[in-house]
Length: 463
Ligand SMILES: *C1O[C@H](CO)[C@@H](O)[C@H](O)[C@H]1NC(C)=O
Ligand SMILES: *[C@@H]1O[C@H](CO)[C@@H](O)[C@H](O)[C@H]1NC(C)=O
Ligand SMILES: *[C@@H]1O[C@H](CO)[C@@H](O)[C@H](O)[C@H]1NC(C)=O
Ligand SMILES: *[C@@H]1O[C@H](CO)[C@@H](O)[C@H](O)[C@H]1NC(C)=O
Image (cartoon, rainbow, N blue to C red; front, top):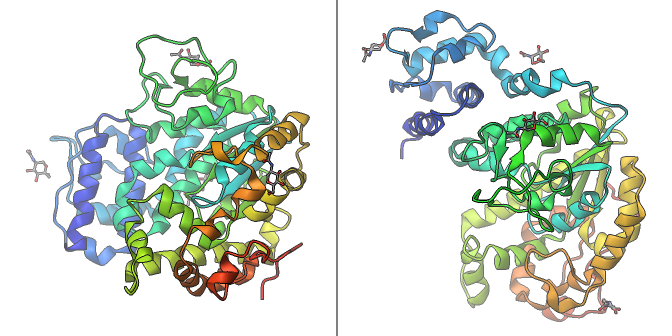
């Protein structure tokens, strides 16, 4: 397919789906469109597609005084994309941080934040134990914890993740996180489907994984007949009142989020340099062999090429899949190297943690993470950790956090064929070296419980 035509069509589809949404969503789409245009000016000029916008053209006027000649007031449609492009280039600088301005116009400006607060981002990738480690922060009452808030954002901007670079989605992720750390939860309303009405939604992803969204006063009385997609675990609540949740966030001393959707540490610099925030970033990594093995089970359809390959005697592995794996490992490594180099803007704000170390000494690692974050760990958190890391092995579901952690973390060694381990070792060698994961030289080593594949490390060195 011609990529030049695909983007505007996607934008149009997205606009159509957003038609009923508020002005914020529309403005956001333009920020996204701008980004694409910025990257691919030449492609846009080939396109004469028309972009029609059924919603009031007034909307655009609100973005730093966009001139009225951009709009055709008579029939309410926008001019051609080509003309839009030149209009955009005029307003490029204003739109650059438009998500930022969106949020700013809401709660963040109205409410004075209580200080000093600390803001913790647990930055991970899927199947690295991030749900489990996230619980360390979720279990503490004075922390406002959100589980994977970017899930909704990823769902809403498929055009970016699909056809444009991951850079553009990362910018949206970053700006949304920025607002969320400021307790502006309204920013989420642009991404939750169906769109919340009256700031109420029963569709906040995995609400039950955030105690902060399930306790008083955020847990409003249960409403019969409202279908609650993501329920609180231990009680029934009414649909989530996002305004109320934002207020609760401001009442807490600390804010912590976990995400598997943001990989590039360098993008977080604006958050770290925002004087209203006091950021601490904890990057969680895990042996890429274990991660792949776990993904092949948890996301078996997405990883069916790997599953098929693992079972075959002689078959060459799909090139795209290999590149993806390499891309994963490299982006994690590059972020870690940046963090470990401690540039001035990151100093004291970055911590690298290996899942394997947490699995072996959960309490000690939790204390280290809390100490790094400058938060005093409570006995409740410590009790939760003790209770949930010594559970018998057999009651652990795929996504459960309750397991005998010191046994679980290397179970993969006995379930993957040696050739898979070897393959990952080759593709991810630089990352494995940095994090201290030892290659298994032969099948016997792989399955020998007495040979550790994890180097003991007190600290990590960038070479
Ligand atoms: C981005 O937004 C901030 C805060 O509203 C503003 O101070 C800054 O000038 C804006 N930057 C650009 C490039 O528009
Ligand atoms: C809407 O405005 C555009 C630009 O001025 C014009 O070319 C087009 O014919 C108009 N469409 C209708 C349906 O009036
Ligand atoms: C949501 O919470 C806010 C803040 O407490 C409140 O003003 C508003 O009335 C609530 N909305 C609904 C629909 O209950
Ligand atoms: C968890 O695993 C460790 C290591 O094998 C073992 O010593 C311990 O007894 C196990 N704990 C439980 C509760 O099964």
